[in-house]
Amino acid sequence: MTAKRFYIAVLMGIILGIIACLIAGGVSPDPLAKKVLANIFVSRVLIGFVIGISAWKMGWFLHGVLMGLIVGLPFSLSAMAMQVPGMGKWGIFFLTWALGVVYGFIIELVTSVFFKAEQPSAK
Image (tube, rainbow, N blue to C red; front, side, top):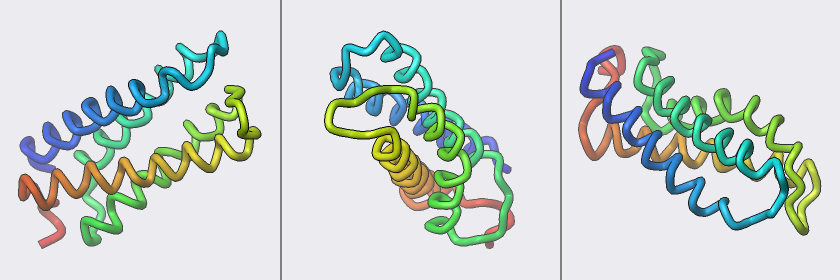
């Protein structure tokens, strides 16, 4: 782990967490909405954190997708508690999990490709 990689990945997690909350904020007047938004934000930041500290030896593309899958799973399960018009519990589960994968990919893309903060073990 390098400090540059860690800080960029976490900062991207924070930025994408804010963006995700802004996008999801107007979806439902459900009383759980604030808890779900907190869940969304923490999930994205945690994906960035895990990407920043991970030393798994694999390409950046697979690494970002895998981190999104792993970290996104428990948050997707908890998102099932929210009622979204037009979506069942499983719909929100798979949407949340898929978006975790997308955000993991984006965080890894920005960290590894744009800022060239590659994993020390990936060389």
